[in-house]
Image (cartoon, rainbow, N blue to C red; front, side, top):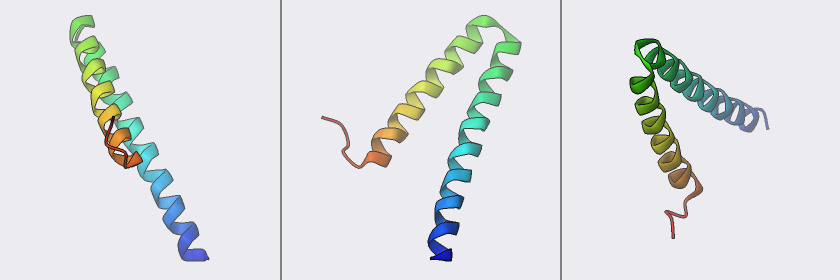
Length: 61
């Protein structure tokens, strides 16, 4: 029971740090300029979308 709790906690922390890392990357890109910021934002949405599909296990339609 405790090991299951720690596995769940670890996965939540892993996702949280991944999202925070992408937020920091996008923020830093916007500091360079609007165009670079929007490009990095688009790339990060694509990466998050692909990872969501892979995590769901469906693999798309």
